[in-house]
Length: 198
Image (cartoon, rainbow, N blue to C red; front, top):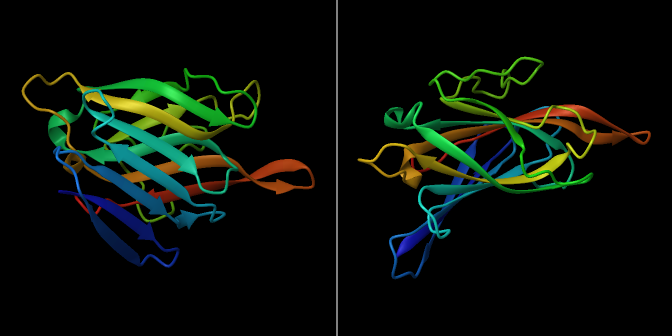
């Protein structure tokens, strides 16, 4: 048996964690985080972490629930043993204007990833600093850089320990162009999801 956990975070800061047991013969699990704890427009996101995708490590899928918004940065906490030892591999992306697969443009895994400059920070929604940060695209919605969903694999250079879902804590998502206003894309959003396993 393994459990599929869903964490629904409400805009008022309260949290509800739901766990549903699923039958399986493998020691595998999927962690689904749905967040609406947001600074800015409350568009919602779903973060899916899968340790049974056919490879080593964890596959992360991040989607905007509204189908609108350009994901510009992703942050997360991970066990200290993996700081500086993670490898990120882009798998696929979905967007309104093209879908380039080389979407990770910068990585900070120093243990103190507070932002990438240019407003790509998480100040506001209850948690501003994370262990790891990924910049996604170039922060504009031009030339196919408009990401509503991204999928990437997280593996480790550590030969003595494998990544597990329990190694991951809170996640943060920084998004631009989250609203339509007179035919233009405007607005920004910062959202945080906290894992029930951490």
